Every structure is written in C-alpha cells, then in structure tokens.
Amino acid sequence: MSKIATYGDRGRNLRKLIDYFCHLAVAPHAYATIQENDHEFAETPYLKAIRWLKDEAEDLYDPEYSDIIRVAGIVGFSRGKASSIVSELSGRDPATRKVNEERIPVAYDKLERALLQIVSNYHFDNFLMLIKSAGFITPGMVNSKNALNFAYALYLRLREDKDMAEGERKRIVKRWFVMSMLTSRHSGSFESTWEQDIRRIDEQGAANYLKQIEESELSDAFWAGVLPAALETTSTVSPFFQTFLAAQVTTNARGFLSKGITVAAMLQQSGDIHHIVPKDYLQKNGYPDRGDYNQVANFALTETSINISISNKPPMQYMADTASQIESGVLTLGEITDATDLTDNFAENAVPANLGEVTAGTYKEFLVQRRKLMATTIRDYYQAL
Image (cartoon, rainbow, N blue to C red):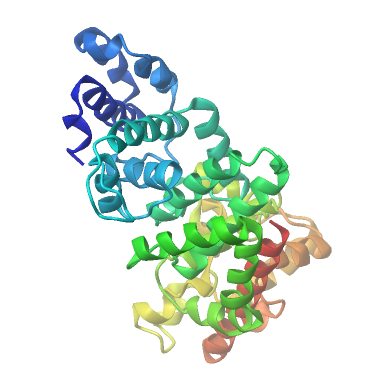
C-alpha cells in the first residue's frame, strides 16, 4: 500500500503511523528511537496517539501493516478489498469508475479518522479484553488473524452506533468472532465475504445478520454432526480444539484430575497436553499410528505432576488409583479426594463418566463419545456468550 505515502507530508506520516504502530506492538522499546530520529513524525499528533505502546506488553493481537489496512478499509470505507482502498485514495468514484481529484482529500480524511480509531489505546485495550472474556487468552489460541481483524473492525463500527448498549455491542462481537473461528468464515476468498458481510450488516443490522448466519451455519445439525466430525483431528491448533479450550477458560474449568489448577492458569503458565488414554498403552495395544493416539478427543490439559503420575497406565488402572485416593484420603494422583468433585472435574473436561472402563478395545467408542461431549461444551459456551 505504497499509495498512502504518495500524498505529500500527510500521506507519508499516515504511512509511518501504520508502520510504527505495528513495530511498537512487538518492540515497545523502539519508541525512544522513533522519537529521537524521526523529528517530522514526532511533531505530528500521530506519535502521541501511539505513545501508549511503549509500555505495552500484550501480544494477543499484534497486527501487521496489511492487517491495519484491512481494518481501516472496513472502518473508514466499508470496503473489504485492499484494492478498493487504493481506488478510494486515488479519487476513483466507485459508481462511475472515473477519477475525481476532489475525492482524494476526503478519502485521506476518512483514512486518518479510521487509523486514529484503530490505534486508540482505549479502543484497542477494550477490544482485547473483549476477546479474552470469550476465553481466547493467549496468541496460540487464535490461528486466524483475519478473524481478529474483522472482529476489531466490527467493534469499531458498532461503537459508532450511540444507541447500542455496550453489553449488546460486546455480545455481538464475541459471538461473531467465535462464529468465524468455528466456520472458518475469514479464510479462503475472505475479501468477497467481507464485502458481503459489511453490506448486509449495514442493511440488516449486526444483530439481525448474525442471527441469520447462526440459523444457517450453526444449526442443530452443526452442533450434533458437523462439529463432532471437525473434532476428528490430531491438530491441537485446530480452531475447534482451541475453541473448546476457550470454553473451558470461560467456565473456570480445572485441568484434568486437578483440584484447583485451572485450564486458564495452565494455558498462561505451564501445563501438559495429556493423553487421556496413554500413548504408550495404545501403541502396545493395536494403535501404533499417530493419527489414532494423537486425536484431540484423547487430549486434556493436565498438570505436569499428574501427567507424570499417570505415565503409561491405562484408564482402568489410574482411575482405580483415584478411587483409592478418594476412599483413603492419601494423595497419590492429584488432590481430588471427593467423588462428587471427581464427577464435576470430568464434566469440566468433557470426559465420559465411564473412563475407568475404557480399554484399547473400546478406544474408538471413547473418542466418539468424547467428541460429542466436547461439541456440547462448545455449543453451551457459544450460546452463553
């Protein structure tokens, strides 16, 4: 998008605003260098607008140049295609396709206003808090930058509606973001989808259009069939598995067999992706392929100490150890000493209640059952957003 910098001093400094914002988001220490070495930019109000980044350590959403352009296109021009923004800045009338130079300064006014909204400390921090409140608390949980881009643009656009309550605004943006994660809405030919979404949001209102998408793409058939099938994967970066973890975060779920340590704490600090039916046990009993034992439906976030204690014991054995612990009160595997607490822990982790009966012979049935429970957890989470 070199076009921006061709519009004299103003265009050059707007280009720098984008570049410096993106750079400071990942390298806050560079602020002093920019301030000392770029006197022209330092004298504009733009440096003041991004000064807050020098003390920022958040890395959930570090947009790159192209991301800022895409968000600005939606916020400032209601356009989802980068080429459309170039046309706007060139003064091209979208109706006649003819260049009208009188449109150029107006376009740069729109761009500047959009960029200042995007780089606002208040807007940016509030958006990140919103995404975190949906359970996505670490960068690794979001594998689609475009899902964040569109959600941020939607948030900024909805802020323009002064009649909309803040709670409703947050509800719409959170549900849109999670919906897009579950449907891969912002992958592939996303620019055309963005154009359509922006147009229909303007025509129908965000809440009504979102409801229409939900009825079409997140129907009962999705929750009961499509989602369990999508969870048949070995990819821990799968948006479906990460959304399951987000669901656990929002309900303050504990790690598998943990008494107090939460999934959120382990995602932010340290925890193990544990094989509920141990890998070594499965390899020795008819499942040598990674595609079998590394199914995400066989994974649960677990404290390292519990993972080590379980080792390669089959579920029948380590659940017998847990039952003995509950009966005796002597801690050998985690800290759960109450049967009701154990039942609750299974529910928090979407683990079938009959885990203690699962063997290599019934492993496939276990996976099917757990995928259904995970899908139900995700559905309940989404509907509660």
